[in-house]
View: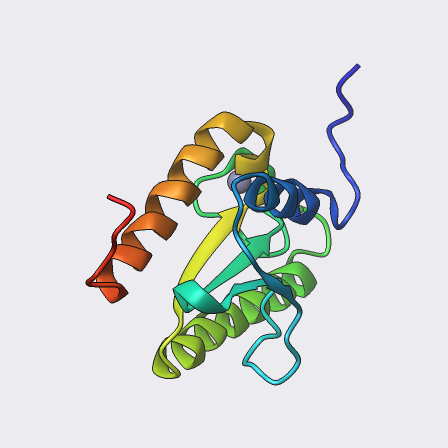
Length: 135
Ligand SMILES: [Zn+2]
């Protein structure tokens, strides 16, 4: 039985356990950084933001449909979230962090997500480490 709704932190836990199994070291919720990123990989200078499709309005996602009641309220609220996300991203990037957004719906297909994350993270290491002896 697949419940459509999952707890607030479930998608984040999926990402964390995935990274953990793949051997990545990370830190959580650094308060001193813009937007308090959910997951940080200091070695990769990468911040991972795990976003709920509805609250952060995943473009084109079926889970991001806006409510048709109290429309104005929701538009304002959700647009504010989108603006805040953009700002967070800009600020993190300005401080030299690479930003990866993981959408909640992506955590439902963990194999695909794993591939994407590991690929992106390995590339970010290659960019910075020139004397990579493991290859
Ligand atoms: Zn989505």
